[in-house]
Image (tube, rainbow, N blue to C red; front, side, top):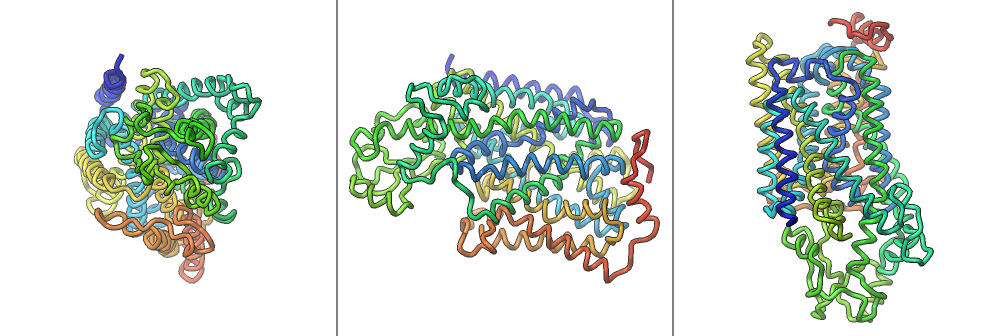
Length: 594
């Protein structure tokens, strides 16, 4: 069956399932809209949390990063998974025990201040909107290729689907939709990986195939072969390549870890289970479900890079047969050219594709002797690698169609969770918590749906002008959450002496310094039409990249909050007792009433 028809069928069926679940699980109360009535089974919640967590950045972009960044991009694997463990151990059970719907609500009560609650809402919205932009990039990439739409129309369709099942169902609908989306995305990710691992190494388990011998009879291991291929083209050795300095890699990992632990859309999932013990259990199950994809990603990235290079570089470097004739390029190449995410420019007019690292001075001199006049693959978007990989490897059409359904499931599931976090922050924390405390439940529910619809429109607008590839954009969002939300949550649970003034100025200082650093080095990317300046590495503070700066912002947050608290009045005694009470285990596991 034709690939386009198969894609329409598979994607259409999955979308019908999502929308059907939304109607079946339509929220009838604020409790169902915000926390699914606190009645979700821990295993089901673990699966929904995994889907919420594994966004377009994980499904589409992370393996693309690994494909081009090699060993150094392990910061994403370590940071995101390590941060989830941090969240499960240090924050989630205590926040669930506190018994409130949202993170700003906890901050407002713990720091006995509506101002603190408002600042927390603003930080949450800034981080979440930035995160949603990354999901919108993934949706646009997927639709632009496989449904033969422009990037813009891909966004519009995705916005419409999210609007239907997120606005109608709230957390209840989102939870059960995300269970279905997890099943789709994990099959879509692992099945192509199994096929490709079998083709290259004869090993059906991709995690093992990454370290196995090639099936070409050479006796060469896959990573050794990849190292040889990339260095022949002037790129850095794949298995030793790093992201800047060791300090930058450490800070990058730390920023992703604490950013993970400060993301409200994941934290809110632990309010959907009946008991504190269930929150711990669902965290463990989520980690199991997440590990399936995260342990597969390095193999997918490495194999995708090898397939790409061997397709374009069809012979020894420098020989006439060493480059692919452009007019004889494979169909997958033509397909992705139409999206604008893969672009070729014949700089020397020989009709062949020269793909090499023209920034490597030694190899550039060598390339000049071959008559090459620069890298002719002028654009290879990192975010296409997972989606293009099955096509490059020549897998069946049904596998290719399944991958696009998985990519869309990953992007839509996380987008829905983020939009709910934004919606609850506006309707529950700002409207009911601050400006209109006497609002009825029905009006609050309506306000929640209206604010979510507005957030969808805003996120889609910004998604048309993303500041970076999907995972890079998400890394910025994690840095913003790391510098603002995580420190105030940690101090709120483990330091009873931090007061409202310290918390407020800590959040402002942390997110302020992080945003200033990102804007300085990446340009004002939120304004359409402005220039994207890129990463100006020579001007980085201690060699720390903008995407990693959240950890520095978190240190500023901690420092300012503690210093300000020392020179201002201590928190009231009942607040200090409240902090102690949060950390004391309860046999029943129910949250105390506040």
